[in-house]
Image (cartoon, rainbow, N blue to C red; front, side):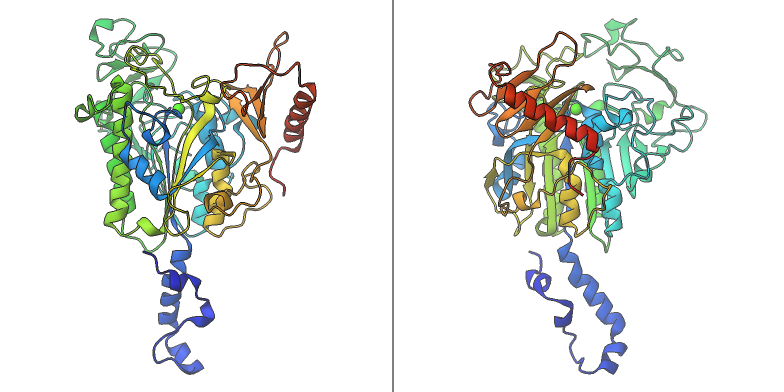
Length: 519
Ligand code: CA
């Protein structure tokens, strides 16, 4: 348990044995400084943000899944708070991650508002405040492990993967990074540690291309007989571990990842980071590869769930969460760590590969009661599991229907770390801490703007109402009342023109102001 009595004490109340005069104080000043540093730390919790890839609202047993058990995530629900109206800012990967790290809606920035290729330059300007740079400013040691998918390198020139890879996570405030640059279904299929591809050897340079085949590596298009996981569409480039990817890659073979060890490799790096000896608090952004396609969990998870490889991959994700929890327990860090778990967008079924999600579903509802999947503006595309634990601060076993979004993490973690955000930082990020702590007197957010697959696809949520805007001439807006019609089956736009007008006005205001959080 943290030393709560010392957290409540004030600097003036500091007691150093035998200290009775100003002269004694000066003599013991270095000791006093050390004691003060030690005393102050419990006020700044360690922070871990675990972001799953493509896990849906119905994929975890604490959200109703019955075909798979997720005991480690369920432990967070039992020891912390579980939210039922939490949203990814977008229904696809890159814009969600952009918004979660910057506290700015991704549709405001064309560089980060769409799914990026593995060749894309860094989508976040290094001068932008991120979760990492804000917490670094607060004295944290900051680390990123896992999926990045925000681009790396400069806009002005193409990247040589054999040299230093920058700008990337380290230029956005991370002290340490062990990541894969894009997604697990596209090249480059390698890990980057800080500024270098991990495991590259001299004389075997790595090259990637999204335009043309490189070298003699077989592709899924030309050699479907070599595939252990058959493809449905796209994903027909270079074959890596018997699975073909989007794009082409050659050379650098010792650095190529092994899909069935991916969760273990990344989890080990996350645990290493947690267990580092350090005097400062830490922030870890752990973005898992599970459960994005191609799903190829370690053999020990085969048959772990009752809905084919989807459930096996969910069980593998839960095991990674368990390893993080065990590391915190082992190191005595559990009580002074704010842990948040969520997912970047709604679920995808049979997405690009023959994974048989539909055939093997066995009644498993990956999107819970919601309509739609990854990429959709219906709830299934963006309503996510969201759990938080901070022992002694967040009430164990609590639940909340507060409307929240991953774009709120910047302001929330700033509040947890005692940092003030200046005017331009996190322009769309609201402090959720009162909601986490069960102290919110009124809703944290008045409304929320959501993005689909592409920045032209937007929806506005306020109270029970959600307006999905028309994107093309001839299309009609869709308005749903999520309280009376959670399945979004009855478009109420024609019968409630006043609500359509009001939500449209809110979006126009958001766009004109370039921010939604008041300064
Ligand atoms: Ca995703």
